[in-house]
Amino acid sequence: MESRVQCKSRTKGFVNAMISSCSFGLIPLFSVPVMEAGMHTPSLLIYRFLFGAVFILMGMAYMKISLKITFGHFWRILILALSNDVTALTMVYGYNFMPSGAACTIQFSYPIFTCVLMMIFFHEKLTARTAIAIVLAVLGVAALSGVDMAGCDSRLWIGVGLELLAGLSYAVYLVLVPVLNVSKMDSLKLTFYVFLLGGVLLVLFTLFTPTGIQPIGTWKIGFTLLLLGLVPTAVSNFTLIVGLKNIGSTLTSILGALEPLTAMAVGVLVFAEPFDVITLLGLICIVVAVLVLVVKNVKWMPPYKKQAR
Image (cartoon, one colour):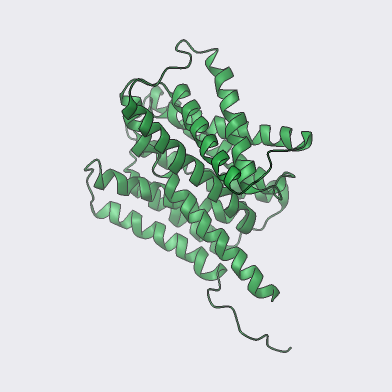
């Protein structure tokens, strides 16, 4: 019975982690049109987290989940919200200094940061299987993005620094969720407060920006922001936390390789970006990296009977 329960839990973790990374990859689909319409990054993120919190709150109301939290939970969630905000801000600001494809590659450094943090602070062993998966995933993302560092200037290095910071802060978030004393909190409640507190912190941040909080100009922009708050925010973050609870930080971070894979698919199908042999090789590397982890760690057909020893 215990083996079957553990199998079900890990399968749930892998499925949710993959859903999370795929839905995260849809961020450009909804954010780029809003930015092209003239909305700046802080305002975009405020509306994203606000609408995400509303959708999560609706789910909590339907499931009759209490909003009550302790003071100890509050400050721990505040740390998570701050880390989430730093990731979002640095990732999007980096697009102003370098091509988004290259930025995607560098931000995907977070699986490496995650493994290093887990080894340093929690003495997690780096297995050969995990190391191979990391290498394949990073190579795959690099191939998908078409990164080219030749002839780089100071602006490009600023972008590199911002995306590395985004990768590091996201790795910190992935590590903190399981180890802080919030892992037993309901996933919807935890996600709601991360968005709510993160939105409040961003509002305070806009007090130091020249534009402040920009209004939503048209219904079309408002609808796009609603979709941004639902799919790559509410859905992705909720499934991320479920994945972290069931398979841990390292495996969840590596499965994040599906995020740039989804972004590539959006680019090809929606924005008519080219699909060549290098892109295909990158896709294969990512699929193999995911399979290296999933096939070993998930027993899709648990044994009917324990063998006596």
